[in-house]
Image 1 (cartoon, rainbow, N blue to C red):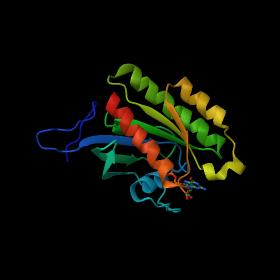
Image 2 (image 1 turned 60 degrees about the horizontal axis):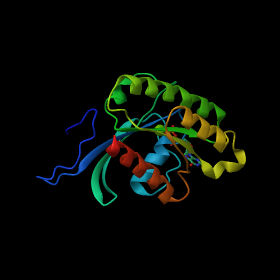
Image 3 (image 1 turned 90 degrees about the horizontal axis):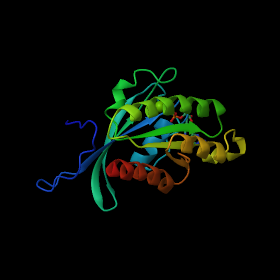
Image 4 (image 1 turned 30 degrees about the vertical axis):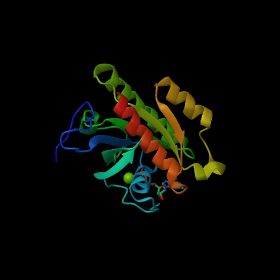
Length: 186
Ligand code: GDP
Ligand code: MG
């Protein structure tokens, strides 16, 4: 398997091989990284997923009429951001996930944003970041307002979405496609 570091590999017109895009999901345990990954790759919500599993999944998808080989790293950190080297230079875009029904997960997402923004200050090309409030279906237990999510995203210069891994596929797909678009334009 060939891995590109830094700049995303664009379509090779000679052999028609698809572009490649490495996406990394970060966030505290329980925020729904695995559920979102599975939803994007299979259109299904799997409610119980091994919480200690970290893996990279590949899938060829089409974004804006262009095929792209998307690799999704669904990370697992025991306690906060450690060993970030394993994804910092590998990623073409980051999705930092928190759960809207957990203030703790929102605070946890800030630690990831801090590390990523430090990385982006040092290395070029800058790697796009999307802040993602998950579990929108749990609105009645909401602890993090949409405004707080948006404000944090603006502070770190990232895009912001709220989704649910167990509701419609299209909004989850939209976020992953947006990550690919941002990676392409860097
Ligand atoms: P991870 O540790 O970040 O990978 O989180 P998981 O994907 O394992 O999800 C943690 C728990 O939250 C599991 O019990 C999931 O079923 C649940 N979960 C994940 N996404 C959602 C969601 O959008 N809505 C609801 N209600 N539960 C979710
Ligand atoms: Mg997981």
